[in-house]
Each structure stands twice: as C-alpha cells, then as structure tokens.
Image 1: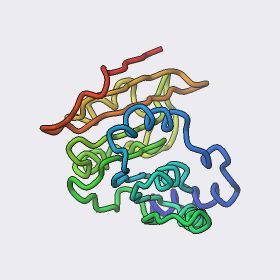
Image 2 (image 1 turned 120 degrees about the horizontal axis):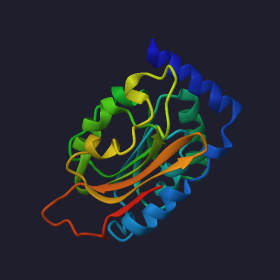
Image 3 (image 1 turned 90 degrees about the vertical axis):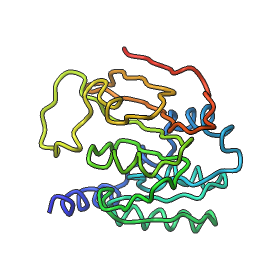
Length: 207
C-alpha cells in the first residue's frame, strides 16, 4: 500500500508539472564532464533510478549511452516516452518502485541517483555497478533536525551517512552543505577494478 500511495503522489505531481525536474542538475553536468566523459568517450550502459521525466536519461542518450530508467510514476514514464520519441532516442523504461527492480550483476557503467536514496536498494546498486563504473548521487541530508512521516528507508540521510552506505566505492567527490532548512550531499564514487585509474584526488567539502 505504501508503494501505491507514493505512486499516486508522484503521478499527481508530474501531472501538475515539475519544471525544476526537467533540466539536468548542474552537479550532474559538472560531474559528468569531470569524471565520466573521458572515461567513457563512446558511452556505455547507464541506470537512472527514480529518473522522473528523464532530465538526465535524455542527456545521456544524446551522448550515445544506452540508458535504463526506473521510476515509480507511470505518468513520468509516459512523459519520458513521448520526449524520447520526439528526439528520436531509445531509452529503456520501467514504471516500478526501485525496490522492485531486479539489479543485474555487474551490468552498468554509470548509475545516477538524484533525490532518491533508498537505503533498502543500496546493496543492489553496488552489485549492478561494473568494476570501474561510476555512481553519481545527490540527495537530501538532515542538517539540523527532521520531523516527518517518511518511511525510514527513504528519510533524508544523516550527515556523512552516505559513505558507510556505499562501502567499497572509491570516493572521487563528496560534499555536504546546508540548503535553506535542510542539507544536500553530492557524491561521486567509483567501483574499483584491476585496471581502475585514479581520475582525481577525492574532493571533500563540508560547510
């Protein structure tokens, strides 16, 4: 029932319109340019969890990536289908809760998670990332205190919590800062492999 409730909420939001979720996030663009483009100049396989109407999926598909989008909202998936068709792009789409997705092992070169860090799927995310693959993540952080009815697995992260939730990834970028009445974490990690190249010294920023 919890999933159906979340689905109806997001369906309604997308019907009403969410302009802020239609353009690629500036952090995603900068992280892609810095960490992804040189490592995968010909694209690869990408997974966009809770990808909404495809602001990042379409960005990737336009750059020769094979993209899979998982989102709980059927409305968002239909909107993405229409946009992809208009742009003559192919995107694999699944209208389902991220928890229901069967993460294929060692399958994706890039995983994108923006404002949907589900603690229950963290192990699946790690397992489906190929050795040498990258995770770009941005999520809410509890900066002072939190009061709300959000399920425990989807509540905003505690400060620094993202690091133990993603064990084994080499941290390439990690910053946390306050934004109005909450905080935000921006993270880039890489799954090590025998041929993994250190792309840059880890960035750490806390304000």
